[in-house]
Amino acid sequence: MKRALVLAMVLAAAPSRGAAQTTVSLTLDDAIARGLAASHVLAEAIARGEAAEAVAGERRAAMRPLVAAQASFARTNHVDTFAVLLPNNQLKVIYPDIPDNYRTRIDLQWPIFTGGRLDGLERAARAEASASAGDLAAARSGLRLEITRAYWALVTAIELLRVVDESVARVDAHLQDVRNQFAAGLVPPNDVSSVEAQQARQRMFSIQARATREVAAAALARLVGTPFDTPIQPASPLEAPAPVASPLSSLVEEAHAGRSERAALVKRVAAAAERSEAAAAGRKPTVAIAAGVDYARPNPRIFPRDATWRDGWDASVNMNWPLFDGGRTRAEVAETAANRRAIEERLAEFDSTLAVEVRRRVSELESSRAAISAADEGVRSADEARRVVGDRFRAGVATSTDVLDAQVALLQAGLDRAQAIANARLAEAQLARALGK
Image 1: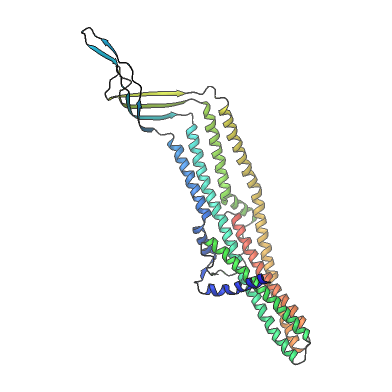
Image 2: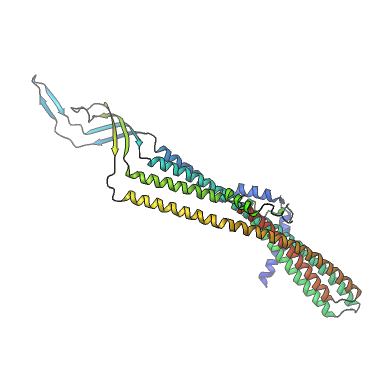
């Protein structure tokens, strides 16, 4: 009981705190734009896309020449100097004692032929980067649907609160009428108690509806990047969406062309094929150019050794042909081929379910629109019944229970109508998501 009292006090105080802040009025398009700009999920997807682009650049750079500056110092043990006596009685030092060895080098390495391995890896990285762009588009579509769901949830909560508050006002007015009739001796006291019980029940519904509205507002605020306690006023009205004009076959074709997840899978199939070709290239020989310029003290290429700085250079063409690698290339080819088949099966499964998803979303939208029509008729009938029963009650030919039943029926019809419209707008958003919009 204490917890319920504290919750009711907090919910009652919430509007007074929000009134002191600036209310943010948002249409659905405004909410989606804000959410896309503030989303951490999209920021993560963008970062992953940039990483994929960097990998593609790394693969491309592996085919270019690599130039490096090298330097080293080595301290060796002392050795006996080796010298020979020349015919002119001069001593010629052939191998001096030089314990301090310095070496600097400008080194060049350039793979000029890799059997297509580096080319295949680069193409695979490019395809993967392109697939990452598809992942980003899919994340945007998913976030757009999530924001739409949260937006209409808030609109629905506000509409439900309005319907409940109107019902509370009607019950309050009816309670005053019953009390007046009781004071005049026209109704028994249990009628007053019944209306008071219904009034308490309606106020409980109002508290619950207000709590639902606050939770929905906080959820939308999180998605659009505003503080959770900032009042948000939806500007888009809760009204029925337009019917689906295109035939189902056209919608399925549009979904195949527009779904970014499918485009990403197609690109990943291509990337897997490129990686498979790159793995198969491991059986082919590779050719590389190596060259460099040395400046060393002593220069080991110059004989006899001399404790002076001398330069030198070298250039070579090297071929490497793996005749036996213990089955590594075969295993790598098998791995890439299996990964490719897995992605192809995932793509086939996506295609097989896409048409069913589009059909389901169209059916949900059409049924929701039909439910709105039925709910509108229900509201009109319930309102007319409440009016007639109210007139009969004031004329003394209907009971207070009849009035309460009519008011409850009108409340339920209003709640059903609001929920039916919200379901239709959500079905519309889900259909747009299924079509890749």
